[in-house]
Image 1 (tube, helix red, strand yellow):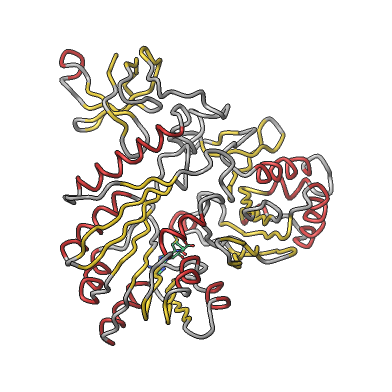
Image 2 (image 1 turned 120 degrees about the vertical axis):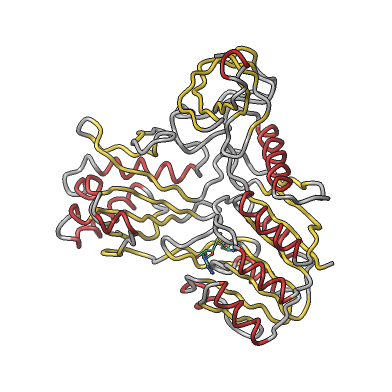
Length: 441
Ligand SMILES: C[S@@+](CC[C@H](N)C(=O)[O-])C[C@H]1O[C@@H](n2cnc3c(N)ncnc32)[C@H](O)[C@@H]1O
């Protein structure tokens, strides 16, 4: 079938309508296409009124098309926009953000301020799968829209040291002393600092494949460090056997071996953050400073709350302008160790637990910063914030759909959207990071 792409939607696909003759005007989603393009596509899956299609060929290409930088683009599930020039990716994301917020019934939106990234080599963390291909271990990601392993030989969105680390691990599969650790690994995660001088590795091993003795992990890491001097520390996490009933419900990896440093000291925005192995840190090594500046710079008052604080990235920057900063984080081990001293309080709690208590105490911060996971903050958090009446809220979001839902609730509780920032933390992918500044009316 031939269709003309009208726009690109959240998720990365182009949207088109089938002709009346072919499909009674049904909406079709075709990946790797751009607005205005005429494409030939094959229908894959049809739902009520919608269909997913596979791109066969571009018949009339957009001027915004670019040559993908990675040989795996299209097959790999990681990237969605390498076929578009970087400036075009930013425009697409801006349009998608506006449209998603408007669909959530938000009106009078301010202009979107766009903050671009380096387009390549930006990721400070990658998590690779490891699988045997024709007798040799290979690393890779998941094939697009499937659970199938895709062996890869490059990942140009990752910091080069991360890919060098993957190659060094595979090299150790050639040595009888170290091969068992590579063969036992189900997944391997690498995390590096902004300057790429230090690196952490986490090896995920299935319970029924743990090499014995586990003490041999030290030798493995020492050999790896010989090839990769940046390696500062490493650990082994045990996963439940694949397909086990418990594993499917909730898989909590358990540490079973460790070598070297337990985390990395990550220098960003004039501070040093301690990130334990496996702990959260913003993934784009070039945009962290910009993100911190948008969230915290120039804000001041008596009391600020940093909800979903992670390692305290925003909390520390906020301390420059506030007498007291309270950082709230559900997994607060690193935060509790590092965010202390006069005017600094780290609280190990969920945001909801914290806010329920704060309402009872009648606390009233000047500023609330919140950076939740994809699911957003949800209805009860918005309602409690509506009662707490902070002067300003800064909402950092990685999902425009849940953001729209939460913003609508906050607007209904008396807030106005003053600034909208698109901070492109994830170039080449459909993922987008938004910072919204809300003020009380
Ligand atoms: C997107 S990260 C943001 C971290 C931090 N703001 C930063 O920039 O480094 C979300 C954080 O929220 C934490 N978290 C998840 N659910 C939570 C909850 N219900 N209450 C508090 N923290 C939560 C996670 O552990 C994670 O550290």
